[in-house]
Every structure is written in structure tokens, then in C-alpha cells.
Length: 305
Ligand code: 13P
Ligand code: SF4
Image 1 (tube, rainbow, N blue to C red):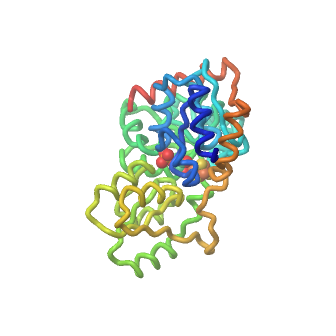
Image 2 (image 1 turned 60 degrees about the vertical axis):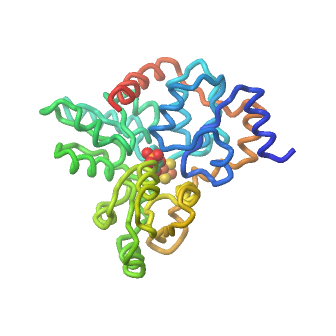
């Protein structure tokens, strides 16, 4: 039996659902029951009837699935799959920063640990950040963490003033304005679509800004035939599948290295996916008190979405 067939067999035996983020390797995405952005994956995790959730993504995503499903087994093919953005916000430092700000409504991006979520009033993803921020009562001071770029973008879109935790994603920060302008110059017909985790200088040249699912939707329904896609290139797999006749370009990072590939997302492989299902390990676990504290703002996000 090939690896894909063995994974299908294990899915039936375990009554498991395999969820994959758009940044996963193409062959991992192709084995998943559902491929989506962070919001859609959290929504799937919240409503699944499967006994086992196999999360092909990074740790905070699998942890979110566990927060929503304490009774289910949540497997992550490689527990080293972290996130530079989540790591840029240590819980103790954030608690001290929050205490300095006085009374604030805390919005945390889902790309954060359970310990940060537990200190928040509501969670958001890149697809609903603007919507979530605009629902916060006027006059409330807002603290946004951990991504300063998404926070600045949401502040600009909503006109709300926000205090920003100075975190960022090292992958998205690697895209340079200079390289993007060069690629635009060489491909003047191409529409530029970008993820809001990019820097302000890069986003200034984007024709469309959105989460991975929103970028996929935009290029699929658009009448344009060429696109410059400024986010992790794993998303190109679904874009090419949905529109094989269209042309997609990924800008090189500032020094020409392939640093726009998320090293954490790419730790998951078909072999590790198979092994984690076979061994029912590694599992994602978290203390019950912390889970409950992190659940409240997450539930609020799902209600507000
Ligand atoms: P999405 O909200 O588009 O899934 O983004 C998640 C992410 O990790 C971006 O770097
Ligand atoms: Fe984290 Fe950036 Fe990788 Fe997304 S691309 S998982 S924010 S390190």
C-alpha cells in the first residue's frame, strides 16, 4: 500500500479528520479532508464529529483545536512546528506590557500561545481582524497582539487607535518592497495580492490584501490572468489547482534566499502524518484551567465571525 492509501485506512480506523493549512507541503494538503486558513480550520475543528483531529499546521493551530475539543485526541505530525510570530510574544512579558497599558480591550491574533489567548478578551485571525476590531465598543482602548503588521492594518481599516505589541512573522517580513517593485515592473499586467502580515511598505503596493483563503478566493474569481502572490508559497498549490490556466508569481525575499517558505509549516511530511496516526502520538495537551481561560475569547471570536 502506498502512503496515501495507508493514511486513508488509518483515517477510517481512528474515525479521524485530517485538517491542513494552505502552507503545508502539496502532498500533505492533498491527503487532507479539509484545507483552509486559520479561521476555517478553527471552525472545522469546532464542528467536527470525528474522534481524532490530525492537524497538519503549526502548534498554535493544533492547540486551538484542542482548546475547542478537550475530549478529542488532537495529533500534530511534528511538535517542533512552531511559529516565529507566536514566539515573539512571551506570556510573562506580555502580562507586564498589558499591566502598563491600564484598562484595555485585548485582541489577540490566533497566531499566539494558549497563555496569550488566556490574557485576551477576543481572538482574531487574518480573515476577520477588521470585523472583530470594528465590533469593540467605541471609546474602549484596544491592545492588539502579537502581530504589529496585522494590528496596524486593522487599525487603518477601522480607524481605531490601538496599542500594538511589537511582534511579527519572520517569513512575511522577508518580502522586500524593492523586489516586489522589480517583479511588478517585469510583469505589469499582474495583480498583486498580499497577506496582512507583510510590512506596510510591501502592502502599499498590493491591489488586494487578505488571509490565505481570501487571497485564494480573489485569484480564483478574478478575471485577471497573472498574479504576484505575496505570502508563503504553499498557497500556490491550491491557486494552481483552482485556476490551471492562470500564472502565479512569488516574489523573492530581500536577499534572494527562499526565506519566504515557512520552515515550521514545512516540518510536517506525509511520513510524519502517517506515523502520528499509527502511533496516536504526538498529542497536543494543555492544562484544563489554561484551556478554559483560552476558550472564552476564542468562543467570542467564533460568535463574532
Ligand atoms: P491565515 O489566517 O491566512 O491562515 O494565516 C495564518 C498564518 O500563519 C499566516 O502566516
Ligand atoms: Fe507563523 Fe509566519 Fe509560519 Fe505563519 S508563516 S506559521 S505566522 S512563522
